[in-house]
Length: 181
Image 1 (tube, rainbow, N blue to C red):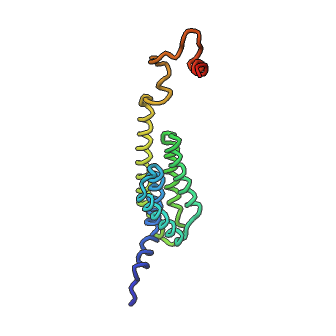
Image 2: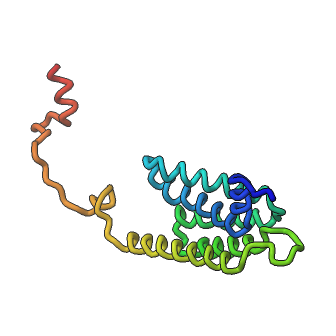
Image 3: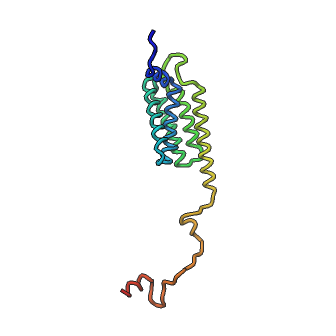
């Protein structure tokens, strides 16, 4: 009897549709939310790129629906846009729904029981929802805080002149400096 080698066991593990989706989502979320937000951290970016590529390799070996993959990509795009546009959850909820529906449609086969388990889809949607609502809450909190830097702080405030640059009848200090040369 032949026993599978380590490569065959590894491929059998990652080509489980639920594992492939989780690998892909961890890679994408990690790249966009950790590496692109803090580009100086190299290790998370490398690990997330490996997760993403292994997940995409596993999906390539499975009977995949491109509509499902398109919905997952659209959902991720909505989630990324939510971070940069701060629509206070609108794009985030749309992204969660698109990822969940896309994950349900991702595996295209008539084999019963071969697909992404509903528990995995619900888990991915819940983790994504928690993240989106946490980020949206932080954005709302930051938006309510008063401005402490920039030109908006200076509007309407009074200033103190420390040194006089004007002499009687001589014009501006720039013109005066030009005459003295």
